[in-house]
Image (cartoon, rainbow over all chains, first blue to last red):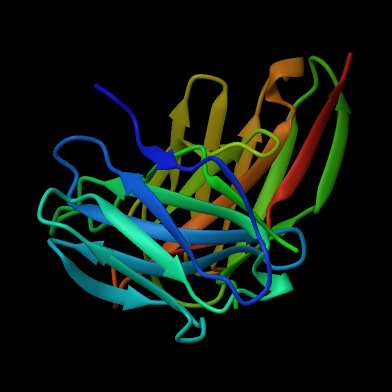
Length: 116
Length: 112
């Protein structure tokens, strides 16, 4: 079974630009979560999607948005990039169940964004 | 803000020794998990313990959970060089099981 795939793995942007990151979850997983990891703030929850619906959102400005498609693939977008957006963006999928909740997260290798 | 705080922030031990990391959290949880991250890579799930469990084992890993103290510990026995990594606890709030929050992490270094 293929793991979680994130693309691109590395990218460099300049301030003011926008970026779209993609995540393909493990087959059969309908829950996809996104996290931002920086040395200063650690792992911060961005949002979680399930069956194309955003169920939860972290404390990030509206420049951060996401969506999920009918095949469970997900994208996140950051508009008007700032220097502080430089981070490792991690996507994780999960076989969500009502009994266990989100349960175990399966992470991709991340997309490392550098904003100059 | 982060739900969990790990202690210590960094730990350096000799290969073969045991490593203990602690996690404290703030609110009631549905379950607690531990993850490992090698430098700059994705996180790998280690173990999940439910709020009604007190102890769980998986190979060289032992996790305890004390819901009255809102704390958990991860013990790695007979450490190996390959255990060098950052370790994170993660909790999902019982009021919203679709949101998993990670702690600040413990950086573990194993000296040969």
